[in-house]
Image (tube, helix red, strand yellow):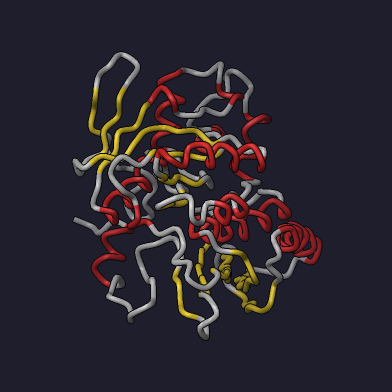
Length: 325
């Protein structure tokens, strides 16, 4: 059987890092920085035909190329401090590059993450974008690691779910847009907003966090595995994007549970922090929804409105295992 993306990483690249270093297995690496805090580093690749369509607006692509990395820093609670950009270009298209740079640099400026270097090469194949984002954690802050969830923690998610996955299916031609929702949900796919401020405010409040870009159930599963716990998801509480109200509830539910391209944070916090979590959401004008709780039983269960409990399959986006579920 062919290895999936995460099995491949576990088998060949997940080695025990040196002491005081957080390595493979979290949203970003954490390295000690001269006894003055920690440097947080992450990298993502975007490949034409795999991560984006060839006709996507270049400013949107520039924005998303950085946003997916800033989302990983957000999941660690890190403050962005800089980024590097690598481009493999089939040709030099100056109008395209101007718009791409505009989208990339606008988001970099908004989050205090200046472009400090990188590399540009020619390629005979499609466009490839590689971004490395750098962040900072203050001294004595380990960050929002995946391994910190505790039994009886509340389980929270930011923003709304489902829109990006359904927008992707419509653009791929796998779903007919009978209700005309694409104009309202396309921005969720092409202009994701990394929850950088949320991540930083959750330091000292949340026990664990993860970016759910590969799907809520799959990424939550990684957090549960790292923490050695389980969870119950209250299906009726999942926050669907408002523009999906006219679509089939089953379709929306599937998109919320398994759909990728969701640059929101899923995090756990003790019940004693409920008021603080809600206050953070109000301060940021960002919906934060309690969607379940952490259990000692090491499985992920869904509790449905009819009272049924069902084990949730931890399947989402995997580069080596076909399309998103």
